[in-house]
Length: 327
Image (cartoon, rainbow, N blue to C red; front, top):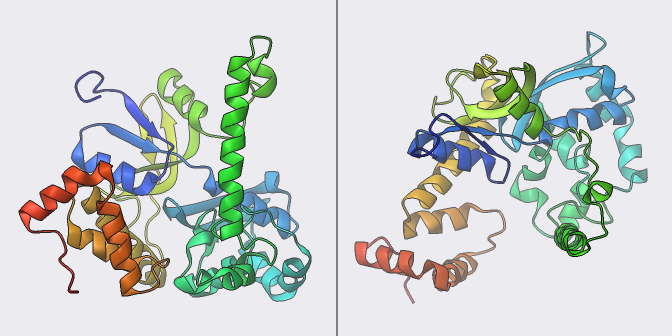
């Protein structure tokens, strides 16, 4: 793209949006914008607490999959206190009677606990992160994300997610192989709420629109380096993507959540751009799924034993940055 279409935009919708867009911003001259539908989680918040989502306006900002509700208004009035009221008076009944699907984590018990710890309400996949204590085993996941499935990241939920992907791919292949099948019957050409086409329309045709985007910070959120990609609302048009100035987020949230999340991203970006066995081991050890030192060592060795990493393993060994474990 730098050589063939230097003025084009790269729209990144695949994960990891945060690390991927930040790495491309730093390593290339490409104009990068990441998009994600997670911020629409505010609509589920509204619906569950009894508000019409179409009459709610909201702002959730931070890093992709780590965004926090800073504004939540219903018909022009601050509706954030209604979330507190729901947690205090109605949440237990909701958690007892609600039967969430594996992706349905927005109003989980974990989300309420993350809110108490962070100070702002988590939106979208932010609810899946939390801390290691939400993910120690299936029983913990069921406690925090729903008794039946245990949320997106449980053994049950993740298996359902993968099975759904397989079924969707099979459906696409079957449609392509059937000359009598009209693809528009399976995939109607109607707006879905996703931002891909509105963003392209704005950039190409100058149809101005406000969208939630992931772009280099450039001062939008105070305390975040300019070359780090943040998720914020922005005005999009033929002039480009102009993120709104968010300003200062609560110190507690910055210290306990956003800065640690940025450090995690820096480890992953460093590992992807400059492979280093020590960084790989540090990343494995910091992951909440790692259960012991021996578990981490076994996983480290299994990764570097894979054929696709043969060259990287050899380079790290030659450069002396592979980890040598004691027997």
